[in-house]
Image 1 (cartoon, rainbow, N blue to C red):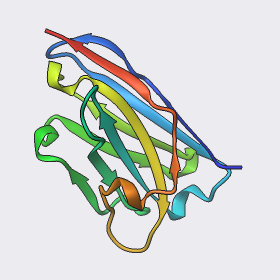
Image 2 (spheres, rainbow, N blue to C red):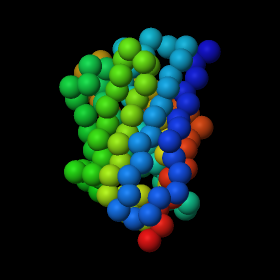
Image 3 (spheres, helix red, strand yellow):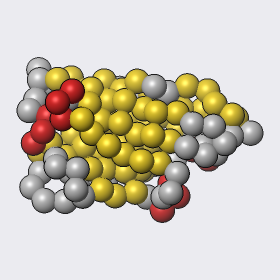
Image 4 (tube, rainbow, N blue to C red):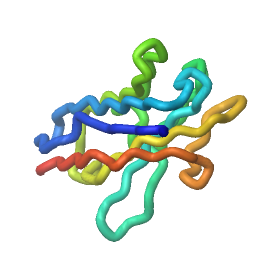
Length: 125
């Protein structure tokens, strides 16, 4: 069965950095578009970033542009999200998701088939 597992969350001060990792098993990783989503208490799930199977199509929500970088290592079945200059408003549960898709990536949560359990990111002011 497919398993998607996130790691790397934690507590960091404003201005700090974290790198999230997501490992997927039970699927052919290099044919899947991957995405990072986040959900803060009382808010809807938000598409933060996504990357297509080849890594040549990426998306970032405006609020993280210039601060977050998505990447993937298909040989390791792993997706990354490097998060720099973290702010308290970045505090949320971060989820990794996968969808088999042709073309560019999508940040629409409903398009994704497989989800991890999430990793908590907390940024203190």
